[in-house]
Length: 161
Image (cartoon, rainbow, N blue to C red):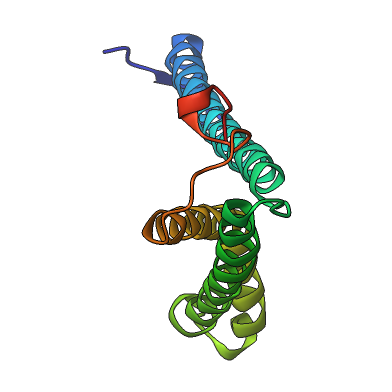
């Protein structure tokens, strides 16, 4: 351990400043590491949000169309647009309700949390609800014995959702 001699004015002199510089350097590295971790975490969250938005837009563009055959009308018009659309509206309302009642801490936070919950539910819930509607429409078409179209977005014929 380095001992410091005191000057007549009460301050330390000599080699005492070296350990202080070392401590300052270590603290600055810890702060830089914490800052870097926060930046990387934010970048990861933004990348995840971008991927979810891209996936949602791609899913909506693939599924939101009108059917031309009996199978297409049942799957797209009644399954995706009616069942999936109603499920999407329900998911958005449930997200807003949960944001306002569960997440909000005070009365001032209710509106902000309700809007944030509804937006997050919409970003993730709309593509999921449309996919549920597509599945429901396909099951109903199979129940009625209708043959699927050749241009349906399915992994079996090479088209991707």
